[in-house]
Image (tube, rainbow, N blue to C red; front, side, top):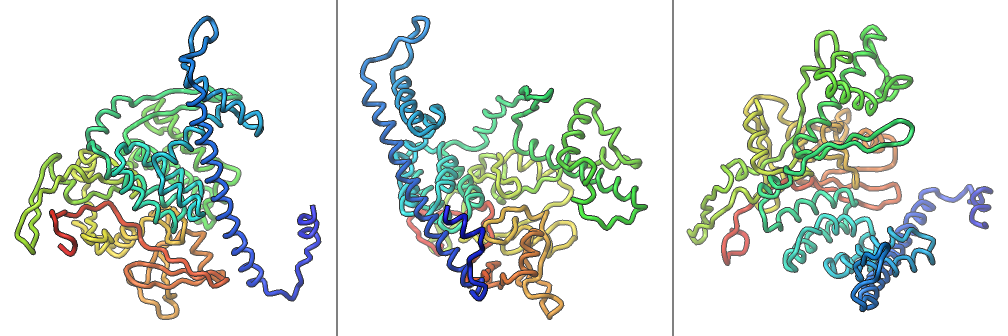
Length: 469
C-alpha cells in the first residue's frame, strides 16, 4: 500500500516541526474516532432492526426441532437472522445474535446514550459501560435520570472512569435496598473448577465483594513481602533494584499470588513461603471503605433533617446510601458497619453536601494527615483517563518543591509512576486550578481538566425547596 511505503521511506521532511505534525495527527484521530463512533451507531441501529425483523418473521408459533422437540419460534427466528448476517460478514452467529440483543436494548432503553454515540460524542466502549451498569433499572424515569448524569461524564472521561460513576448512579436508582439484594445474592456464593489445556484448571469463586477484595489484597501483600524478603536476603539487605528486576528469573507477583493461594487453601498457612518471623501469616487484608455517615446508623434507621429556611423536617433513610470498596464497588451497609466497627482506627472523610467534593480528612488516631487527605480526595491517578488506585501512587508536587513549591494539598496530587515520569520528563505541563482540579496541557497545547472523583455521599432533600437549602 502507498501509506505503508511512505511510512517505510520516512518521507516526512526533516525541517517540519514535530509538534505541528503531532497536532495534525491528533486532530485527524479525533475526527476518525467521531466518524467511527457514528458508524458503530449505524451498525447498532442496523442490528436492532434485524432483531425486530426476526420478531416479524416469527409467525408460525414454533418450529419442529431435533428428536421431535419444538424450539421456541422467537428464538429460532433470532438464530436464523443472526446466521444470515454472520455468514455474510464472516462472523460467529452466536456473537451476532448477542450483539443484536445488545443493540436492541441500547436503542429501546438508552436513547440518550445512543444519541451521543451517533453524534460521535462518546465511543461504543462508553455506551457499553453505561448499558451494562444500567441494565438492572426497569422504569423509564430512573433510566432517564441515570443517563442524564452518566452521559455527560462519558463525554469527558475514559470508559474505566465512567464505569465507577455509572455503577454508583445505577445503585442509587435501584428500587430495592442493596442490603436486601446482597442477602439474596449471598445465597449464590460458590466455588468451581473449569478444566484448561495442558494439565491446568481454573479455580473460581463468587464471594461477597468485601471478602473477594480482601483475599486478593492479602495475597498481594504476601507476594510482595515474600519477593522483597528473598531479594534482600540475596543482596545482604541492600537491594536497589526495581520490582520488575527482582522478579526477573524468579516468580512474578501473579505467580506468587497463585502459589500462596494454593498453599493457604491446602495447608491453612503459608508455611513454605513464610519468612522466619512469620510475617506472611500475620498479614491481614487491607480494604479501603468509603462510608457515608448516615450508613453507619443502624440499618433502616431514619432521621430528620431540618430545613433552616422553613423549619420543616424531612426524613432521611440511612440504608439507602451504599458504602464503596476502594471507591468503585458498592457494598451493603451492614458489611460497611462491621468493617468500620472492627477497625482500630479509621478515616473520616468530610464532603461538601452539595457537590460531594472532599473537604477534609481526620482520624481518631494521629497519623500522616496530609497523605490521608490526598488519598481520600484523589483515590486514583490524576492524569486524565488513568485509574490506578491511590495506594499505588506517588505524591507529586505540582510546583516542584526544589523550586519553592509548598507541601500542601493545593500543590500535591497523586500520580502513578508512568504519569509522574511523563510530567517531569516530557513537554506535558500541569497546574492546579483550585478545589483539587488539575489542568494538563499537552505538548500540542491541548488542555485537559481532571477533577477529583466525588466519593459516595448523601444529601438531605427537602420537599419543594430548590438549593441552596
